Picture 1 (cartoon, one colour):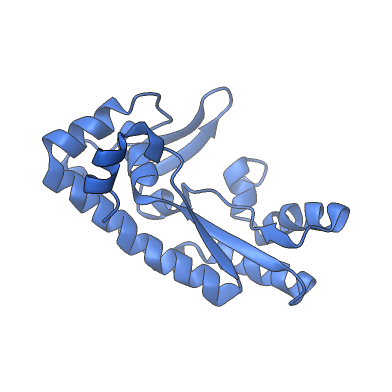
Picture 2 (cartoon, one colour; picture 1 turned 60 degrees about the vertical axis):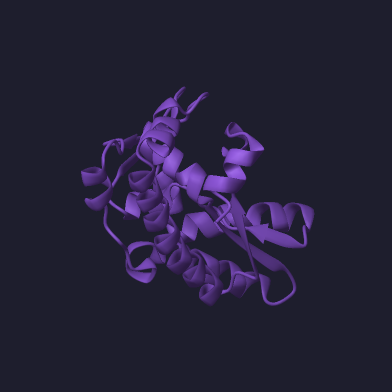
Length: 184
């Protein structure tokens, strides 16, 4: 519904208004588009909800190679075109005076949410798949990366000047493991 967090993300009029309010009020020189890093997993076929007191919940959680292969590769303009519309609305109001910042989640962060099905402190299921089923884990990362590229391209084409990749959970791994398994 339109009153939920994701309902606002999916409504270009409301999402662009939320993006523009701090610019109008404080005159910042850049606008971060109102969205969420879990939009791509939803476009790939996972159910994404935000539960009060719990945060994001993704279902079904990815637990196997079959689950990974069951995900959908999406066309960003079709599946997430609402974000492009939001960016275009913000650009129309801001003109070229201010930058628009688009974003997505980094592969490990997005994959962690997809595997854990929610926020996690220790990422047990993610680490179990990464270390115990490395080929399946790499396939999930590959799917996330491939879909994120089109998603970011769509944002740039809609008018985003800068694209940020959030690796919120990258610090859950030791630096050498991150460099070896995720940096590529």
